[in-house]
Image (cartoon, rainbow, N blue to C red):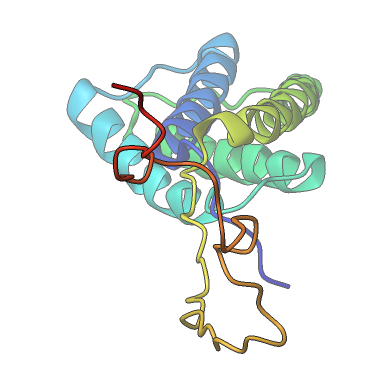
Length: 181
């Protein structure tokens, strides 16, 4: 199945990457962790942006968005644990609460993103006739008209003028002989 390219691809990829990064960072901070410095965080963001850019070539469904959000949060969470100065793993109930928080945030965010994605596609479908480039119409060449002059079929343009018309200047006549002196 061939699909059209997604609109605003880079903007959508940046937005999705920023949301995944923000959700993961918020979960990591709420769990008691410390974020890595700006350098490693920028590298993580750039590394996450690459696969997200590939995924946003087409319209993303709720399931696809949910998978991207959960996978991205899991990968970033592990990267935050590796690159942050101190680990925050605590008891098992704390881990379950953190996992539930990550999943709930991913579900809510995926739902909002899928609704905004659908609204964006509907808006673009509605606006498409206004921005479509008109295609010039091809007018087929008409063969030259050939007139055949047949006196039986085509009447003469002088058909309404009688042959002995009384119209026109008077004829010259000689002086009449009946003049009296």
